[in-house]
Structures are given as structure tokens and as C-alpha cells.
Length: 137
Image (cartoon, rainbow, N blue to C red; front, side):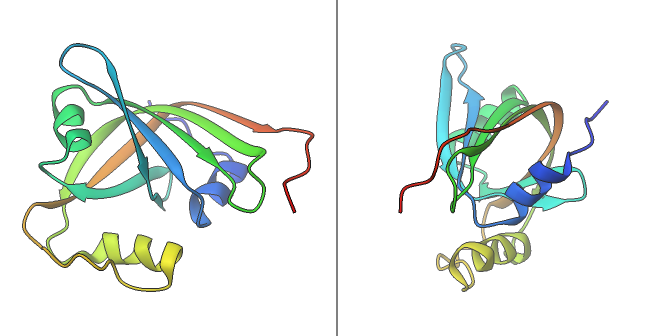
């Protein structure tokens, strides 16, 4: 059963905070990609192309992990484990544009519609930390 997202994690996901998505290669070796993230209720959304390594890996083995840090304070961090439960087609870039506007204020610049998907992730385990350091000025 999916873990409900804590409010602090929702805040990190809803802001323009960068994440790293770990998927598993066929060999079992981890693959890590920097990603933009969105949220739909208690699910994490990541837009990508269906031919990307992260999409291919997650189709073969849906287990994933995310690391997210606060843009304004990198000492606000979250570690999330879960699984991709849906590879939702996004040919009109509806989800990708929404996520892109959060990060850049503009629609996603690469307008290739073919093969666009949204990875929908349900979480199994969430850890949040606020380290007692000051962010750089």
C-alpha cells in the first residue's frame, strides 16, 4: 500500500526543487538521473520520453528511489522509495508543461509529442530531514 505523503514532502515536491531519480538497470546496477518532479495527490510525477533509460528501466523493474533537496535551503531534504505504477501517455505535454512552468515559468521547450510519458510513482517509504546548517548566502 502506498504511503501518504507528509506535508513537508508535499512542499518540496510542489516547489521548484530538483530531484534525482534512481532506477535499476537490467544488471541490477543503479542508474541515477536529475529530474524535475510534480505531484498528483499522494503520487509523484516525472515527465520523460518512453525511450529514455529511466523509462525503460522502470518498465522492466518499477522500483525507484528519489532524493529531493530544497532549492532555497539544500539542507531540507527527502529520500523516497517507491514504484512506478503507471506510465501515462502525455502526447500533448500537459503534465510536462505544468512541471516545466513550475521550474522555468514557461512551457517545456522541446515540443516532440511522440513517446512522451509521465511516470506515476507511489511511495513506499519516506524520510525527511532538516539539517541544522545555514544555506550559503
